[in-house]
Length: 234
Image: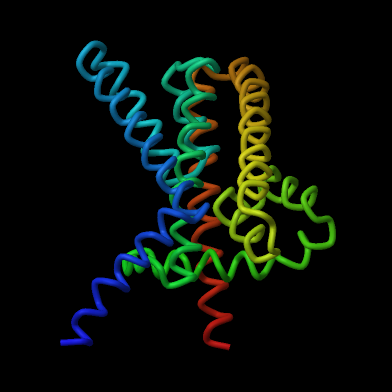
């Protein structure tokens, strides 16, 4: 009976530590932002269904293939900077505010998400691989890491590196999101320039850019997975 009575106490303690931690509050912020964004898309479905379909397509592309592909997809549909940039920022912010705290809480064994276990393991390996490079330059190194478009250098991996380096939670989030927003603005400028160049040769400039980016991302993903499999076998 005594053992059974202890179980609710342990569960309540874990809930208190979850809600009382900075990571728990960040997770709640991420969920609230995701809910707000979903409600906004839902309202678009009611009042402007055609535009909503475009926004949902861009959102899905950004989540699956990353910011560059999502932005290229948006531009290929004729969406402007004023729409593409904020949406991309919201998507990257939600993913960071949700997945980073889940990783930390899983690391501390406060939350267990079995479906995300393999993802967390891959991100942890990527973070460890780049940790020493970032550590040399501290916060500036982390900012550049998140901003520069190398493979596996997004905000999620960057935030995990900041965690492994022992950065304070909110400082880590601020640096990572700042680098992410600068990267999004840089991609917007680059794609606008590419669109002007390619448009002189073809009226389907944005679509061509999107297809090329998707091809590069898919090939890069396959190469990354192949290299990891070879390393694991070795």
